[in-house]
Length: 390
Image (cartoon, rainbow, N blue to C red; front, side, top):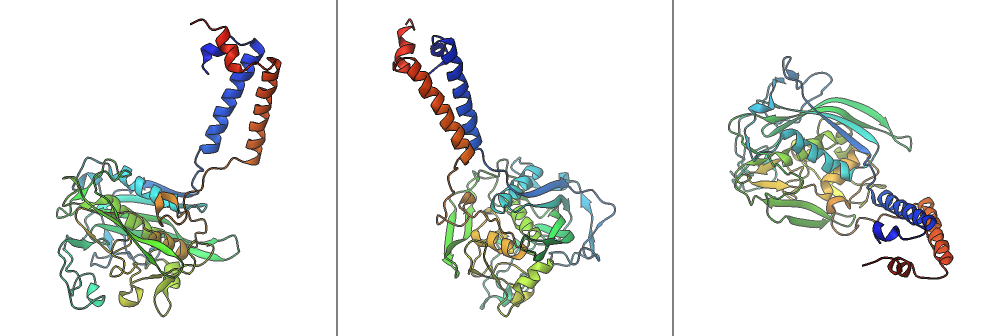
């Protein structure tokens, strides 16, 4: 039906038809419009130094850096960061924050500042050999791997600025980080891939998806892809680094009191509990081996939380990344179907109209039926065509 055809209807029916069409269109938009995500990650550029930002201050506990950075760092302009690809750091950081926000839906605000600083020089990982981010305690014998490097303190740095005790709906409390700073390294030895379209992953090939049953059902435990473009090849993906550091701010952090409480058990694992999905899942961490809280990279090397990153590599949020942060910070509204984070077990539910919306649509249908009867049973198409000259 088009507007030209409607013009030949009687005036009363024409108005009713136009109104009904407009109402149906608006109702359709209201039904299919996505719900606003509840987790609100507010990102702002970090203020430039001076004064230097304190890494080990009284209110900041200890930074997520297992390297000798001293007690402070100077925040400098992002223009000092070495990168290729043409993307914008703010846009990449925002895309990473949105990815976490699509999975965690609790009504909570996390304020994060992002910036650049001179961190530790780039030192390639030596795999499981001594001196390589304490990975010598993970496996034996040592297997050198010079294609990877440490994330925390070398590619990025998470500095918690403020924790608060949050009272949950059941009356229990949990510590959550409410303010933090994330910095990227300007050391000339580090070159980032600045993806101009971080949400599309177009610069990377097909992602490998690894699944395992950790006690609560089969879940995704790693999503990784290698570069397919020359800009991304041989560079460190800033989007993956941002995902990793934001994960620290959301709970996967040795400086978060709630995280230490969660893994301070004989096995140093994160036990996922209800009402979070896949309750009964047990996520192994490195807490009992080196004091840090990372998902065990020997068993699950392709999580966003893994402590090292290779050049030309991108990782997306896995199910255990999200479940681990959700359990530590007691996020209850976890959307594991978003972006197929956990696999195909729980597909995205279809949008269902509210009962009031359904009632309105039935009312509109009633108007159309009544109008049709007034036309003495003639099909609407016949009325339009009989007075429309070709």
